[in-house]
Length: 136
Image 1 (tube, rainbow, N blue to C red):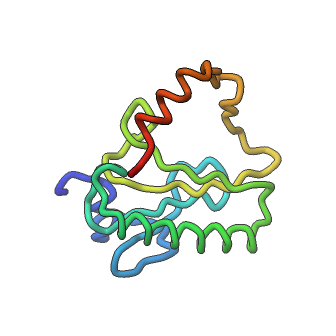
Image 2 (cartoon, rainbow, N blue to C red):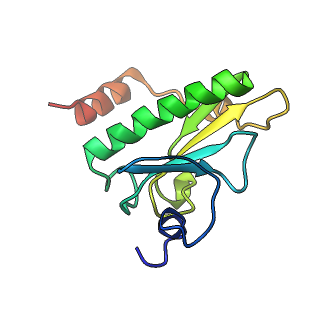
């Protein structure tokens, strides 16, 4: 996509701190990191979100995410690693080019804990949702 900042980074039109590249994906350090080592992994082809990206490309991204997370753990020994992929503005997606965040979590890293915002559904509602979402 012509005006996509991530497409421009992949093409080398905008500088980045690249840490990995192959024929399908590109990974670079987030320019506004949550913590040291915060990395983005994205496909070289432009896809908006998880609903748009081909399954094989998304699976390949996952393998690269795992390799980079292992490298971060080896090099920096964080207390945890947060891996997330947001879809749509309401879910926190700011750039319309699918990407996975790898965020090392250290003692001083500010994180959002969603536990206090979770809901409790009655059994009947859970069964309805289960029926609606069960894959064939």
